[in-house]
Length: 220
Image (tube, rainbow, N blue to C red; front, top):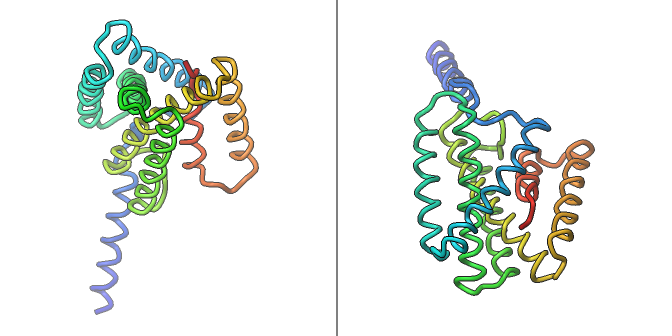
């Protein structure tokens, strides 16, 4: 019986180790360069969404369909890779931002929920997804991402976090009347607070990362 238990324990340990180390991380390393490029592409994605819905006059519903199709196509390509592909990862960040912007605009404007209600609902959705991720996987991760489950949660969270960021920017700039400069100041202030908490507190690094993900954008 001892040998059987010992063997079972060895197999279980091996499976757990394999689950965590079977592949290399499929997301970018979190560095200063990461955040700079993330701000640029997230902002560009937001503007792309506006270009489709407003400049090209597709409307929010059709623009949302377009960006979702693009995002899903890129995600399927990402899903099939077994390594980090930089151009694919960053295109996904851009398209996730476009999807997030159109979700936000659809709720706030097309469905006339308003900026404050839209921001609240989307923030609630973000908290729920992070909570489910924690319960299912035992932690909220951001890097490295080496399992299919974490990869799925990562991109779902990226889309919802982008939606929150877009709605929050509209709420601060439009509903509160603080404009673009006020929105940038608020986002920058929250970003600096997240950085301070990252260095000085024991708050979950995963939670701080995703808060930072929400606000690291130019809130057009």
